[in-house]
Image 1 (spheres, rainbow, N blue to C red):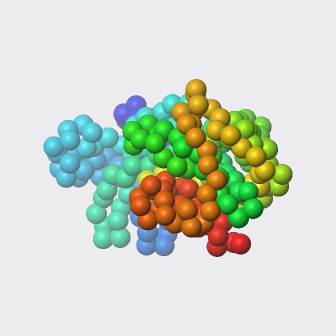
Image 2: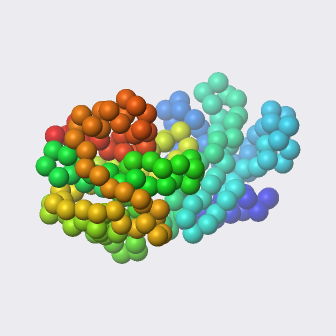
Image 3: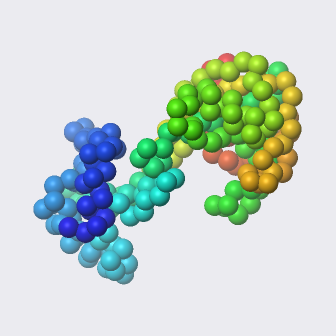
Length: 226
């Protein structure tokens, strides 16, 4: 058994909720050792050009922040596939997203996002610290990123940012604030914070200047629940 598979077995005991079986004609997760080895042989032929990476199954990467898995699944037609999933680290609390408003206006920050190597307008977000509730984390993130205090805050629900590969389900909060200012410039790369009307947001979207998925999802949920 490879080290990746040994770590995978340990993770099954630690986070059984990440390995929920499916009996509804979805993608069946293959967990039996012998079937995994059979599937790896099949995948080795399908992804021959990728060498060892084509047959890698289990925990591919682990850190205090993220864990990356490659599962064997069996599709409805009986074929096998190797599917990547990305989670927050097993003991790391789920994240929070915060949609700040002043009256009917939305407040966004302009932040540099390393993954896409560019500046993006977006809502404040972050992870809970150990022992924090979602609301406590939301209030802290507001203070850190917007220098803002919530006069009222309510939970809007959870969202799945990309359920094709991401296993995270951050909690979304709506926070009413009165004042704000860009914070976190030194460590968060936040350069600006602005208040936008609904029409201004539509212009940002139509011009391709608001493309952050969590922000667009949060706006949709917020307006749908109003």
